[in-house]
Length: 252
Image (tube, rainbow, N blue to C red):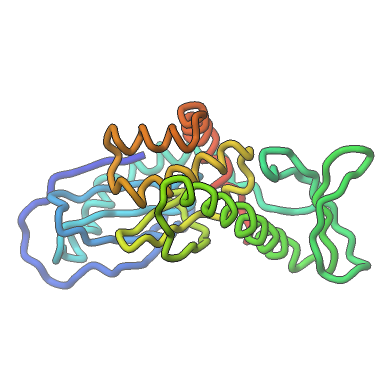
């Protein structure tokens, strides 16, 4: 979701902070302000799942101008965020997907704090041991470990195909993108992708690995991406339709 407004030329008093919060109808959301040398206007974006806000601004923008921009578009923010469902929090009794398969979260406090895939009454379960206070963090750590194992293997496979090497592989909980590739060959992935089906995980890795050779989204890039992942179009569409729901799951 995005809304743009052309920058007005007004006196600069003090630079806008890079990180702050903003109240939208009682929801206090993280707000990130990013300067971009190529930006000619202020652009406001709501992160997937309504998890935060991001404003891209031209260099040297005044703090007051950012405030006025937000005030003018407060109604737009309220309307858009009203359509975002309440953020489900990870807790016992709900289901979250692991590689696209819904798993019931089951808490068993008697054992030490581990997380394992299992089954309850023949249905997939995510069994979490240890103190209840640490349940959500342990599930997040479990997904990070699974992501590291699966994605590092897929990166090795796809980089071997194109004859390029990744400088490093990193895992983060990003809200604005599922993956990225820097000019020096560093690949970054959101560990939340482990909740998506396996073919979608493969597509994401193929997409970022393809950037090691084609740092753009031109015809050559998409041709290479489809060579690495023939199911690119279907997986890309799945992530577009369902990615917001995965981003909305709370692990606090």
